[in-house]
Length: 340
Image 1 (cartoon, rainbow, N blue to C red):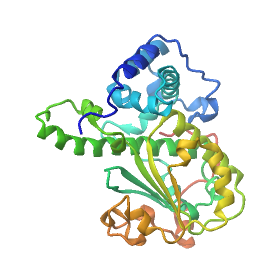
Image 2 (image 1 turned 60 degrees about the horizontal axis):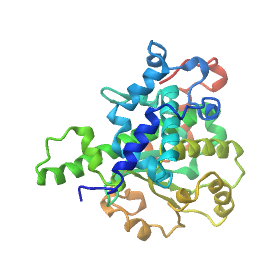
Image 3 (image 1 turned 90 degrees about the vertical axis):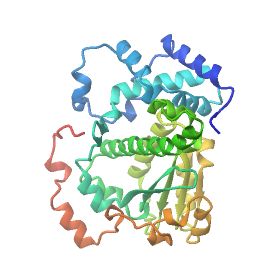
């Protein structure tokens, strides 16, 4: 159980060598459409550094938190274990991280709160809670209650993409926490309990380092939302290119029959492997969810035993208005100050 992806050692080494040669340069122009900061919003931690990009690239490559064996294995799996393709993909991911600094969302004392949390609390019911039978963290969202046009009165499309990246960083953090807990027990039995924290992840199975996503479509509007689809497309581009092999399963529950048309458009933005991770379910979702998640880790509102947090509450219109009264609409806060 301690050895994963046996036989990939030489491939991992080859990817490291190829990226280290600098043969695959990051194309900033190609990925500009998925940048999460405005040009004048560049994080201070980025601009304050005097080192050039080559030095940054070397520094980030040597950070075990990102370029550990697990990371390289994920990129190899995403590219059919082809070292050349995986190295090119990894080099682009490193370049994107240098430009966008998603690590800034995680402070030294934990996850940094989102300054726009009130808007999400009012209009985007969501929560992180529980874990599946494989130990993967679960992200819950009442997607059907989110009205993107209304959200965009308070946030820009780029800020919504930034929020998604923030969530991916937090989920990655939770994945590693869960993996360390599970693997530590195995290593202790084998006398390896003193291994450095990041090295422990190299013993984690791929399933430990993925997430489960549950999207509840109850209340879904059937009006065509082109803005929402555009944001979804950018989020999928980021996930598939910079966070590969992080999704374990996505349950879409309470899906109305008319969701078929929306799904046919949405899946065009996913590769075939990602599409297979989605399970489209109607109102009879519980038995299917129980195959992957124990009842104690399913929210009470879905028939389980886990109490949902306040962030998952479906707010009444009165409460939404009250919360939003403390938030400035976009037109009142332009030009926008940089927010972390």
